[in-house]
Amino acid sequence: MHKDKLTKRQLEIFAAINTYVDEHGYAPSVRDIGKMVNLASSSTVQGYLERLKLKGYITWLPGQPRTLRIIKTAS
Image (cartoon, rainbow, N blue to C red; front, side, top):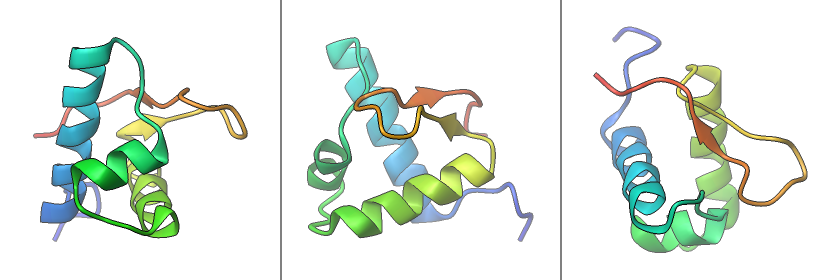
């Protein structure tokens, strides 16, 4: 598998982020994302976000709430 290709779960989380931003006009919190994809653990969600960041799909300002930004579209 290509390292930049998203797994099924990563794609689900990426899509949830896109949907939230479209509906609300601002980025979701880690807890919001967890609720949308049925993950109770914030640390698990954070792990997925870290991998999306490493793959170049999203970024955020560390320590700042709701600064998550999409920088690449999923293919």
